[in-house]
Length: 220
Image (cartoon, rainbow, N blue to C red; front, side, top):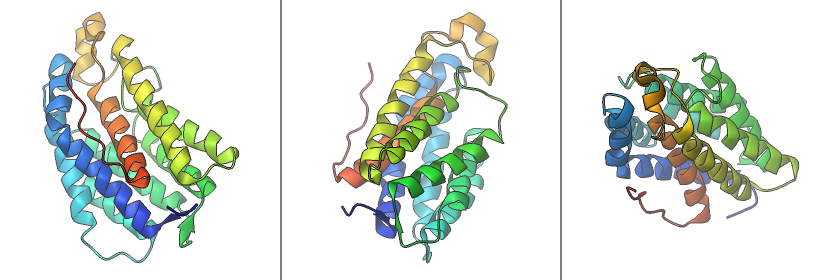
């Protein structure tokens, strides 16, 4: 892959992330069954299908590609997950420069814009056992990597690792939002399915650039 991120790279990132979410549908639903109503896997599979459908349309720029994906995801009826993921993608589009190739810095700026739009949709903070526990550290890792002059593939490798650690950290957290909050301390001991979904999203982003198909996560 070239040092920068081209349109085809970005499309591949979205496609791989969507495929990975669909491949882990059962895992996500199993995680959600521990603290919620067990439908998160179904919701994220619909989100993934919306992303894949958006890729079938011809879009002229990376901005338009992300915007199309964002609006498609927002059309999914899936509780809070679809508005949050859709807003993240739309925010990325807003922060994406109108250039044919994105640098590590451009990617970090787009991710930070996506995070800002995501945060505008929820009062949750890091530590509340939500998607944000994986998303915020992933974006921060990409920003730090960009500040060190690293290209997009290496920035996303760090972002994917940070998202994975963030998702795993939710196992020890007590939920403060959604149905899981009704469990109080009993919500501790299971990873947040939304955070795991974000981890899978970034894992897919990086896998696409690394040209290395990532197998589904295994139940533990």
